[in-house]
Image 1 (cartoon, rainbow, N blue to C red):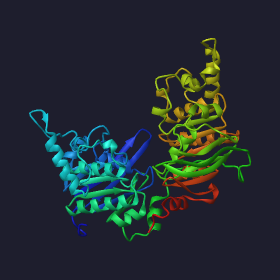
Image 2: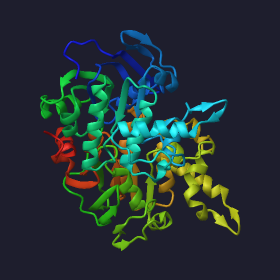
Image 3: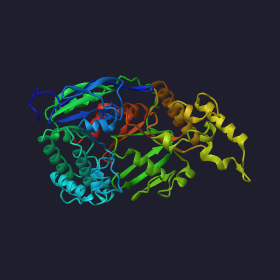
Image 4: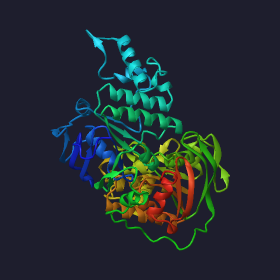
Length: 505
């Protein structure tokens, strides 16, 4: 660690980044010294990912400046960031599975002469780099896709070193690693910082922050709320308090008094998907909203997708109205009355250039088919009924979905499942990319659907949203259900403690 008072290697001052309808970064400051591990903390949505993308050249800030060694730099592209000595290792490693280790290490700056790649030289350099990182056993010629997650992490770090990185950004680097592999990761990080490399380390696991971190910066709602806290001595309570509390007003409809008493619609028994989640059991009743709370990567979305049949579990059962559903079959799930609104609605749920009508009725075309013809009049009437019921604006059945706002696009996804009626709705990040006003409308709509007897299981990265909208909350940590309770008995601070339990020193 650099001595106190040493000049920063990297300084980000007053960084502002605005997207349509949201100010993701609102004057963020960050200072990182040579040879230190600087931990960046904040809840999901606090602005960490956006700040990383600004630093890596993937986003351009609307205001503010980045300085390296006191000199302003313009990181116009990821290539410019690499040339400035900034390398980023994302949680989802951007390695090419079909290429060898050496090919991945030098991808984009291949060892070549007269237009020919010098494979022997690249393999030799790769071997030396891997040995430097303590992993001489990884063959430079092995396809990256055949390596373990831990070995892939090492390859990604080695690739950063091929660019002579001075600042290395690591986003949840231990998420896919076993305990002993994390120890080796920390050893490598310490060796790198000993040579003067600065590491920006992002993790939700507080015990890791204690072990590897020197100082901490905390973001909340796109702002810097703490700078330069000592990683090993700052109390957990103080860190969690800094991370909680929001400026956004959440307007939630009132929830029914007392627990749900309707019949159980969904029953999940000992559901396991290796590497994602294990031994998950719970139920959802008619008219009940159950929320899954946890960190990104904890297994929440995978649980929804497995229930829906997009993933085939290794073991366990999913029952709807007391009857098992064939695992790994979305057709069976839909036929029995399930509907899924996925996290990425634009890429996973909507045909953006098709009309509102086409998107609403696409899952129910057999309803309008007769002797090889579609009853277009009935199809338009059903779409119009959903447009009116859900107040989709503008109320134009033929309007391309692409032209609708995020909130109205989400209403179209919900309308698709309501045409034929659903017993269970699975909602993954239902208000992502939706402005504050439209959020309140979606909250009211989801509560109204529950009041009509639909069972709702939802995932949200925003703890206040889960607590405000759900009747009951299930806390997921590292693929396991660690706590469940009525939402009225929990608060944001308590949920974060549960998420990080076992991680706090």
